[in-house]
Amino acid sequence: VEDAVPLKDTVDFPVGVAIDSRETTGAAAELLTRHFDQITPENHMKPEAWYDADRVFTPHPEAIALMDFARDEGLRLYGHVLVWHGQTPAWFFEHDDGTPLTNSEADQAILAERMRTHIFAVAEYLSSGWGAFGAENPLVALDVVNEVIDDGAQYADGMRRSRWYDVLGEEFVDLAFQYADEAFNHVYAADGADRPVTLFINDYNTEQAGKQDRYAALVDRLLARGVPVDGVGHQFHVSLSTPVSALAGALDRFADVGVTQAVTELDVTTGTPVTDALLVDQGYYYRAVFDAFRERAGELFSVSVWGLTDGRSWRVDSGAPLLFDDALQAKPAFHGAAGGELPP
Ligand code: G3I
Image (cartoon, rainbow, N blue to C red):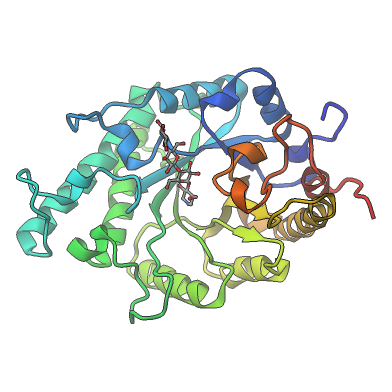
């Protein structure tokens, strides 16, 4: 893709990609730095990644490698994720004897303190443990909570019944943002400056009506309560049958809320078997969706795709979701996203 215009030069917002350290060397790194100006750690800043088998907070070598890579290459790093029900050690939600925490006041205090300790440890590490916070520190944002909205409409509050919710109720979301705000200000603002880390809520299927309503309602409640949410994230794991207007509509739905937005995990499956015709359709899809993003550039903190090459995608079995193939060649999807030529 030597001769292709860098994707990042075709848009007025930062464009990111989820990776692990496999993409930080060789031809993959060259491709990445040519086309993207931001990275997200795909797995290695998730809660479980920060702890060893003895429950001791231990920065993962992959997390360190990605911070170093971002600094060395002048990339921004979008952190993912402080508080989630997935990829979180079971002991977070247990007493030392292994019995589950309940929603008693005593157990709520235990879980809230664990959350606080976790968030402060991550913040402390990313700001000073890894290296001084300053111009060289690539961290610009964090998903503070991920996937807290329920997939169905069965609950009045629309909240996913996760272990976090079962013990703490909806307040776990407030606490996560308050702790993150406190931690990053506390750690970074020694000189009185505001934290330079934008705090996001993040979820999937936000392009679908019901989930979007529940998401918007929660964001409204959080902001009404003064919870320090800075940004709304849309994962946008979609397929060729998802109308592009639904993605645009999701961004428009939150445009007046008063916080920034990010597309955090974009991928577009073709279905299988993957054919040349479908790959061209996908090119037109990526073109339309990136055009919708360009029209909304002022509202976008960043747009990230969830992986560099198809073979590395968690959704590869649903059909070639990303911009580049396994030989690091640009697909029609890339040319579409970058506004280039596509076959008719
Ligand atoms: O690292 C182990 C490896 O040692 C082991 O041999 C192998 C065997 O299965 O598993 C490896 O861990 C896998 C890990 O990815 C790293 O590749 C896990 O099994 C696998 O479950 C994990 O999947 C990740 C998934 O989150 C887990 O929930 C995907 O890579 C990652 O793309 C995906 O990302 C999520 C976002 O965090 C949130 N939004 C949805 C998105 C897609 O599910």
